[in-house]
Length: 422
Image (cartoon, rainbow, N blue to C red; front, side, top):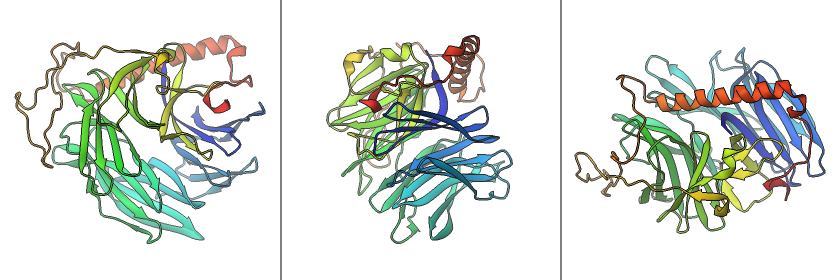
C-alpha cells in the first residue's frame, strides 16, 4: 500500500509486551499491546511538535521526550503502567532537531541540535545527562546543505558513539564523536566517509570488530544506496559497495541477523533489501518484498529489553495490529530484482584515488537505467524526496477517507500477529 514516512517508536519489555510511541495530529500518543491480548491506547499530551523520542530502561520503565508548540520540553515516564510528566523548560525558545533519548545504567542522556545561525545553516549539538542532577555540555557545531540529515547514536560498553553529517569541502561527510561515560568527556570528531557526493539519510551498526555505515547518495539527481565497512578501532575502510539500483532508493537500514548483514531501504512504496553472509564483503540481491504491496508500513525506531537475535536501530514494519518486521529474514517472501547494467564511470571514466589510498568504484552514470528527469534547471536536490512525500500523503489521505467512512477500520483492539508475539 504505502510507506508512512513518520517517526514511530517500538519498545519491547522483558515480558515481550510491545509499547508504541507515536505522533498523531499534534498529539503525543502511546499504545500498549500485551501478550495476554490486553490493549491500551492513550494521548500523553497535546500541541506537540514532530521532534520526539522514547526509550526503555533495564527495569522496564518507559520514557518519552518531546517538545510542545510553546517550545517547552517534556519528559514523560511510565512506571508500572502509570505515566507522569516533568517539564525540562525550554532552550531559549528554540526549536529542537534530531532529538534523541539514550539510557546508560538507568541514567538519561538527551542529545539534540538547535540553530546557531539560520542564514549559514549552522547548528549547535548539545548533550544533557542525568546523574543525581542534570549536566550539560555543547558537543560541537555542524553545517548542513539542503536538508538536516539525522543523527545516529550507538551505545557500546562504556561509550556512546554519535554519527552525524557535516560539510567537508563541497559535500557533507559522516563524522563520529565518542562520549566516555566513566570520564564524562567527549572526544574530538573524526571523519569517517570520503565519498564526495550529496547524501541523504544515515544508518550505522557496530559489532565486536567492525563499523558498518550506509547512506543514500545522489548520482545524476537519482539516488542509490552506498554501504561502507570500517575497522572499529582505527576506522580504516575495509569494504564499500553500491547495493541498490539507481533510482529512488532511500532510508537505508542495517540489520544483523544470525550471521547475515542486511541493508534494507525503500523505493517509493516498496521495501527492497540486499544481504551479505561475509559481513559486507559481498552482497546478494536486491530483493523486493511482496508484503509491502499490500500493507501500510513504517520505519520504526526499535529498542528492546528482550535480548533479541537481531542487532538493529531501526526496522521497517507493518502498522497495528501486526507490527511484524519487513525486508529481511526469509527471502522466499520476496522476489529478486534484476540488477541493471551500470557504466562505472569515475571523473571522466578514470578511477580516482581516495584520500585514504583506496580505489573508488562508485557509479556516477548509467545509460541503461531509466532515470527521473526534470527539464528545469536549478531544482533542489531533494526533489525526489518531495515527490515521495507527496505520493505518500495522497495515499494516506485516501486511507483516512476510507477509515472515516467505515468505523470498523479505526484503531481498535483485535488479535495481534507478527514477530513480537511468537
